Length: 316
Image (cartoon, rainbow, N blue to C red; front, side):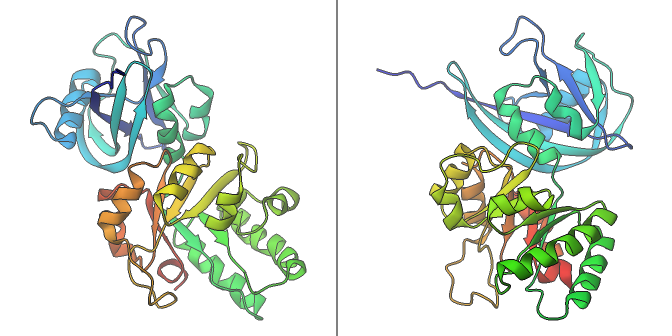
């Protein structure tokens, strides 16, 4: 009879300093996954909330007091000898100066360089979440007025959007190819990343930052379509699609429809509870899509999402 390991519930912290660097610590050599780097934290005690465990563990390990934190991602990972649920929080304000109170090495690392450190496998989705923003703009159809479209994109980027999906299903492939360099130029000037809702090969040919897969295109794939130097996201509506995206090693998913939208009035809605049920088995960050407004951001965080994806909420 196979032995199913007890799942250990752990609260972990992505702690950011004023420069946006992330604090990591090194596991002692004699423990599970010893010698690897990790995000600080520890097991919940009986009756303890994840937020309470986070504050206690971070104070015990680093000597600092958490003052502002919000949920980032929940990761379930089964090792051969151990199962863990990582309840990960983004700590944006704290009091004190962190030190390794238990003799552990600690280090501040630029978020984009976290991939260069050896982490336990369960931490990989956290690294992906750290390197993604909380808002994902999906463009409306560009229409005939390209200059007006680009001007509206510039205004959206000025408001803080840093991840853009160019979605233009009504354009021919030739017209889409003409539009991409102009959109990429606007994004580059605003330090925003651009993904194409198109064939993956087009992303590689045009020098953009990655691709967004439709759920149909996702399910046709048996391997990740682009290398790790690109971002690859996918649209998901079912648990099967969510698990397939995780198995392919994609960078994030967009889960929809969460709430009512004018474009899909008769669609079966997930609601925030349904969103959470699809985020739980995902091995990667998930954005909530469908009727999302900026005021829904906190609810999205609470239900396991990276943030929100939207057209009108960001486009104006």
